[in-house]
Image (cartoon, rainbow, N blue to C red):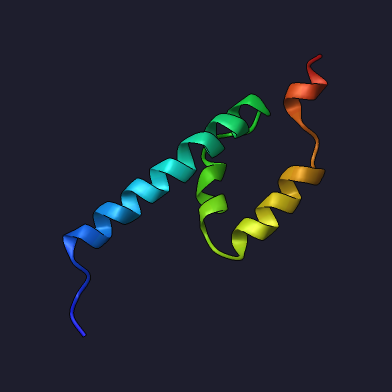
Length: 64
């Protein structure tokens, strides 16, 4: 078993960007901090974050 190659890390970074950019845009439009994207990328924590996001008050809706 060897260490992870540079190609592995390049693919991980690309996958995180493909997933993270749209999630951060959705969070920003909903009035949340884009830093929530980190919670959406961690396994099992993302399930909790989705439920918190779905059932909490949306600041963008309260402004209208």
